[in-house]
Image 1 (cartoon, rainbow, N blue to C red):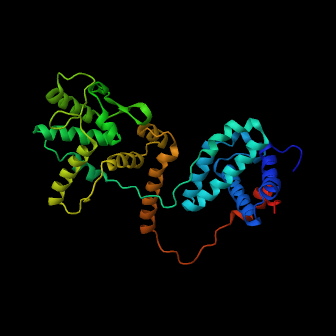
Image 2: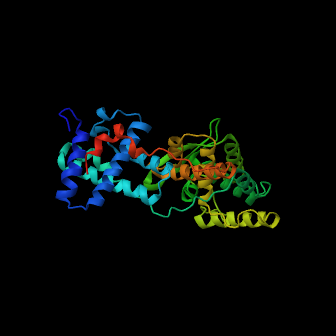
Image 3: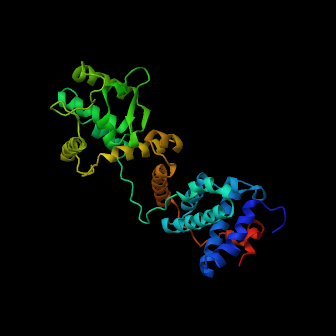
Length: 337
């Protein structure tokens, strides 16, 4: 490497030529696998992020960039297993950098905290807009229990809250003014305030005026028929009741709807509406955007399935260029054998 190379280039050199083969004693195949992961990371930097490699330093190697790289890999067709292998290589690279320079220790600790994904990621289960509309409107608001149930189901969907967060909402957490909001008590004693629709705000106002008027501000908003705080099982029982009613008339409606599917459905509908995933992360109360991105991947799968179903059959196989043949771009790493 020349004398004016960046610290990133120098760390890569030491990682591949000294740390992996000499200090760790890794096999040639493992070293080549890690080298290829770094090659692909550089392709991501230069092509996707449009970063000049000659100016990229270790200060730019951080958790956000690595998570974006992993998402780029998956969007490009990499399996969960392959993405995990790329992550393992970059975490090993970060470990070496922390050994080499103490000032890298703290910034790179966040990279070490990135968790690999389970190789069999569960499919996101959600209702489409028509199905959700049918379900939350099923309770009869002209009855006492129906109004209470309609309010609970509507709020569960519109706020995107977890079922326990719904049960924990107090009367004082609700704002039914011109810009209605609800304060949610999330995991780890963390709070967030989310915007709800005017329609949901109006429904809440009606419910409170009819059934919770005179209650203290710290009293639970959603109660059962005995007036006690609604439980998670109570919410699920409510959902099951209306699903059964709908299926009497419509056998195509999903037979099993879990309360958490309301949250999944809200996230998927927001994504389909073009809402930025960072806003969706904050709305759902996720600490790490990688948690929220499961919805983005599910949405991409649905789009790909639709596109593939409509795509014309190719008459002949097409030969696409291989990024490994771009010697100008990858010359930086190709000297490492």
